[in-house]
Image 1: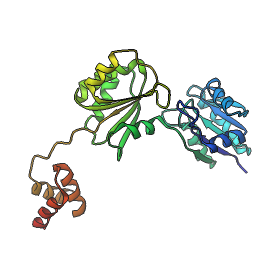
Image 2 (image 1 turned 90 degrees about the vertical axis):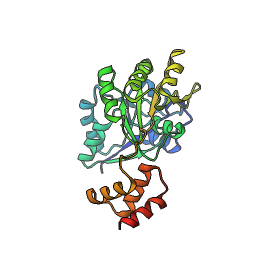
Image 3 (image 1 turned 90 degrees about the horizontal axis):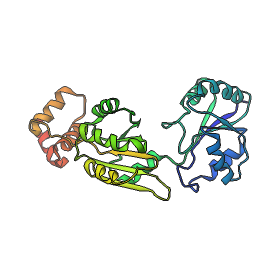
Image 4 (image 1 turned 60 degrees about the vertical axis):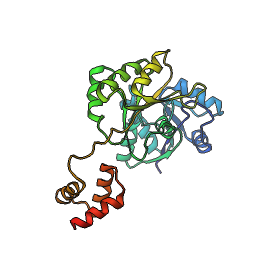
Length: 274
């Protein structure tokens, strides 16, 4: 029988954020593929795990993946971890998981910490829908291009950013999305100096310009303010009825949201049209 690849989440800071299952899996597998073996060895030592490590990172994943797949096909079970958090989320691992799937090998998740989800959960911004865009481009031109693409999204935008680029990114966000746009900046999550800044982009610029920025950062941009349609409620109801395949119930719900009105009021208008 083939072995199993376990995709194991590890703490993003606080070493206590490790599940019992994750510790057991890391103890039982034949080998652990780690982004930085020296960094991961500290975690394993903390839990008394003696399983052998092998490096697997963005610079060797193309050559390393076939080796790991061969071992899985030979019946060995392996674990994949990153330096912190959940592998494959803006971290190495996608290639290996994809090739395992294509080879018919079993891939099992051992969930746990994720900086993205942790930041969203305490941000106070809407989380019913959000877009994760990974790391912002390092240069201003690429950053502004990406921000232009997402600035009008009606959902929260989440990304990762390096501390030394935070102020430059805030400047670009102010330019493309407006200095009054609401933002949350999560820094050093689960660590001693954890910080969650919440406010406008201009307030964030002032706050973080006051000192040296340190630690990994999750940056969250609030949904774009929704502009009311130019026409009346009745006109918008009629337009959606003619131009879409939505049901009356869905149309009423959408128009109520667009105009900021109670659904019952919009429903009465829809009855007049029907």
